[in-house]
Image: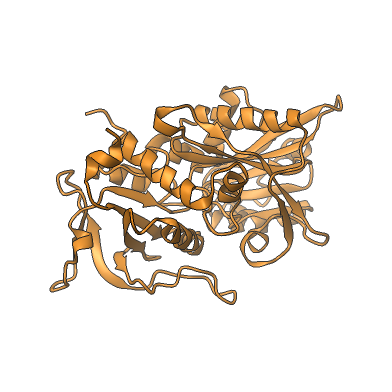
Length: 382
């Protein structure tokens, strides 16, 4: 009997959790809006659980705006206050507002879809909370989520698996470091990295807090910008090449994970790099889905994506980002940039578009992720 059939005979109750305390709050809301719209109302009953920017959990109003409208980003602002029941026997949410009506959607939850990006959502924290509550959920577990969110440890684990990385330096506790040491990197490190470099928060996404540095005089300000998001900052050498992405999806009925057709991000003239505005607000990039690659290049990207997925101990889904260039010998050089355990699910996001091009349309993709979570159950042996 499948996990879905074992849970209940009526509709499956899916708690879609979105928003959160990270700088990617708005993008999480947009992703959640797409996921909610894709869940078949004949099969699923959706519980909309919003997390406000200051961390409050609410049962979001049905009219909560979950889209970017006229350049205005959405935000979770209100609703009935709720809390996840930590006791596995509770299997759901408890109302915190005194006297608030408890609707049938709050009597229990079958599965959670945490459409959360960034800190307190994609970094293993909510995954640990859901483990304690005994609730199955979509996506990777505690370790894979935490390690994939931290760019330093992503690189270490991928390097241990023999997967190529770009050169980089980690600055620990960079908050306030600029005023204390305006150099920050010694001459040898600067010589090794070269210019340009990308200065990034180690634990963030959606290009938030990232600066492209083309002159070392810009470096202290770039570190301060990144450190405002995360005190650990990573400085990456620029890797020339095409920007290629590939989606990985858990296999059906316990089968092996599968890789999608890759896609390519091509910047239009005048666009310097793939920043937040280029990703979500401006019409400044072309997305080739699938990418114009040779069969051999496609196979290499897919194989490396599956190796990265397994090296990071991912579950459910992941998006693996690459640079595809040429090595000194003229042969293809494939370098992994990042592994995303909860990639964007907005209408323009690459992960669903790659899978649609691979024969898995958006509603089927969402359904497959929910079924995989239900079939997998809790990840901790009892």
